[in-house]
Image (cartoon, rainbow, N blue to C red; front, side):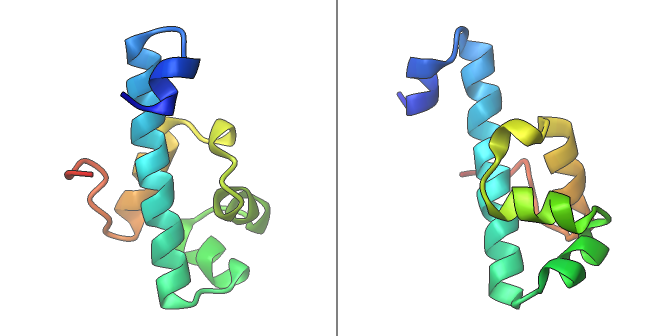
Length: 83
């Protein structure tokens, strides 16, 4: 059981949040590990610098699972692999 199970209304919503959190962590780690600045990350991910700031700030509510999956694909992160 995770915090998402406690705060979300349904198991499906909790699973979506777990998946979104996992991909967001992996994207943030990728950007940090490669030492990308926000402008570089924006270019690589195909999003605005504002969106990079939201991503790096952990603003999970600003991103859908689909959008995070697309971003992960753009930088060759396996968004569907094990946690």
